[in-house]
Length: 167
Image 1 (tube, rainbow, N blue to C red):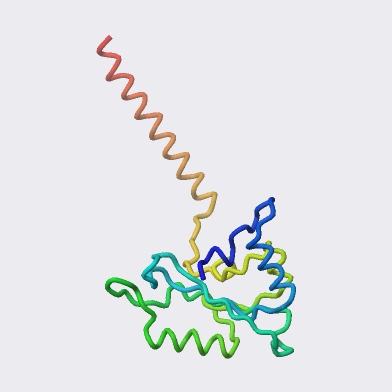
Image 2: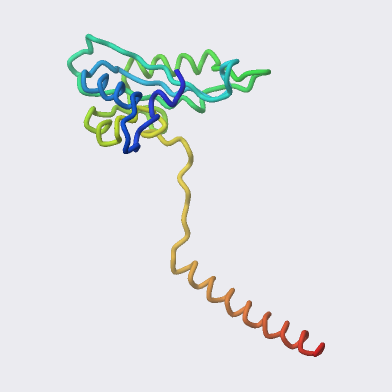
């Protein structure tokens, strides 16, 4: 399915039929899992897609929960389309079947968490695959800013002297 089917309408103050359908499926506890696929796999679009797994007979230990996999980075470049190599398919399938959480790949989310996130069931909402950004300490940035301001002030004074000769 289109990724919008898993997220479209979330955060929208107006009624949205897709969100209402997702809400019904979540509230009925029919969604077992969602897999977010890589970009450029399909011939009709370069957009990523999602696989939605429904189960009316979820095992007791999985009730009230959804299993999410963000497989957006599990692909190989192909010509003309990307593809998921055999080892990637095995990783996705075995992770889904075992319901094992894996950092930056899979997680178990409760129905309550889904409700708090406005019934957005897109794995990319809950599993972030990008590397964490490192931030410099504020004090270090302020010190550097002070040095740069002094340099700018000195440069402006020098420029005024040069331009003052042309009056």
